[in-house]
Amino acid sequence: METVLSGIRSTGNLHLGNYFGAIKNFTEMQYNNNCYFFIADYHSLTTHPKPDDLHINVKKVLSEYLACGINPDVATIYVQSDVPEVTELYLLLNMLAYVGELERTTSFKEKVRKQPDNVNAGLLTYAVLMAADILIHNAHKVPVGKDQEQHLEMTRKIARRFNNLYEVNFFNEPEAYNFGKQLVKVPGLDGTGKMGKSEGNGIFLFDSPKEIKSKVMKAVTDTGPTEKNQTKPEVIENLFTIMRLVSEEEIVTFFEEKYNNCEIRYGDLKKQLAEDIIKFTDPIRKKITDIYTNNEYLSKVAKQGAEKARESANRTLKEVKKIIGFRTF
Image (cartoon, rainbow, N blue to C red):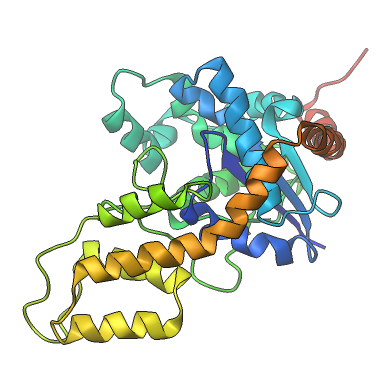
């Protein structure tokens, strides 16, 4: 049985990109693999969240994981900071990562551009912490979107570098778990890039119907097609991409035909898309609310997950330190 690891950064609610990018498939995946799902609260520190917000965000994501169907009695769900072995491995792996290659990562360059006044060392070594998250359980597979492929390749590079340096075959070189399909990238509502919280272009699983409708109706569009069967510009294709995920096939076909015949009314498309998103997210939102208010259950799940995760992490770390040459007197 292969070990699969997935993490969600604890910066607030999960969105449709998270769900369709990986979480939708977790329910089935967890019964066929040795799965670890963690909430990356250390990663969120690069943006300096307020202390109260940090805890609330972790609680939200844990509730959403459970509401989406992750079974804590089958898979291991834990909070990153509850497993201190991760940060120790992070320190060790930093010795194998070079500044030049970290500076060339797309995510680092993007963060430097977006937040020039907060280019902290955590951003530079973000990919190394991700590698530690993955390698602490020596995972074989990692569900990732297209935007994270480079980070996964960095993990593979670090694992290979460790094995070569110490002449061992200890770390796996993890591969993308794409559920037999191309890696999913759910677009945002602003017409560019992926859906995400920091981009402000996402539909979250906990959004109210009113919030969803407001966001979708404000989605970026163009003036409409001028020729039959013309290629859709990115801003329009993005809306159709989301519609294909949440709407019935006949609804998608209807609007495809309207577009191809230059009869599309974007207002009608947006209303239908909002209605279908609300229909899709409503049962999940209700489950999230029930779980979020059950502090006793959440505490039990987090404690149980930490114990299981630390057992695996401790095995890995002990072996890594032994390979490197650390010995006790």
